[in-house]
Amino acid sequence: MGYRCYDSDRKAQFGLCYAYHARKALADVGPHIATMLTATRFNAWNGAYKAGVVSCRSALHVLQKVDCEGSPFLKAATRERYSIWKTSEQAEYPFFQIEQERNSLLKENRSTFLLEECDKYDNEPRLLVGTNFVVGSAVLRSFVQWVLREIYEIEESAFLKRRVQRVALRIRPLHRK
Image (cartoon, rainbow, N blue to C red; front, side):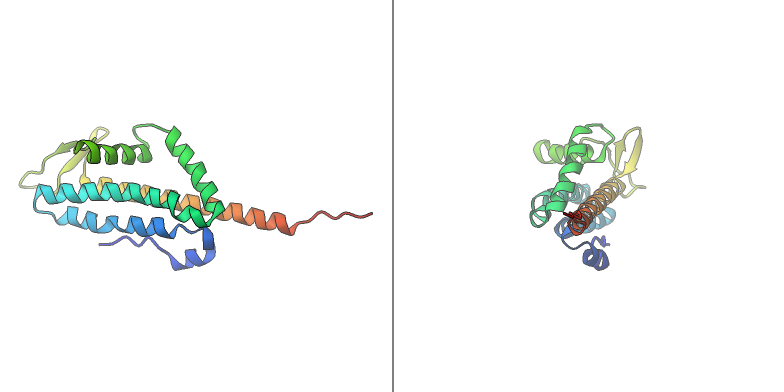
């Protein structure tokens, strides 16, 4: 089970405004989700969950540090989105959840979500998100979907900035003497 994070047509259209490395890093989450779905022991599930959350956060880091180096338009668009993510420290906001979960898993070796152990009828542990218990792989999938949506928005914004600059360079005022 893998996520198809790259689109060659989109890459050809967007050129330098395409976040290839971030999408590649995000594709690494797919095997972790597959492991979570098939794990027979809690330790295997827990390890896959931790690795998946860390991979989601690292995809955003790769976007900022690697993909943006080659494109000033992508860098500007990413900077705008990051400022929105950083100022919106709401418990429901996915960036805040991913950031908090990653830090908690790596530094304190525990989840920020309340974990319900699986019983003999349920093969995957569930996490308390808000007021509902949600299967752990669904939480990770929602993180991946949010990151993909944000990358898409950043690429669109960068592409628009690039087009506006190109049009501005083509339009030259007529000066007659």
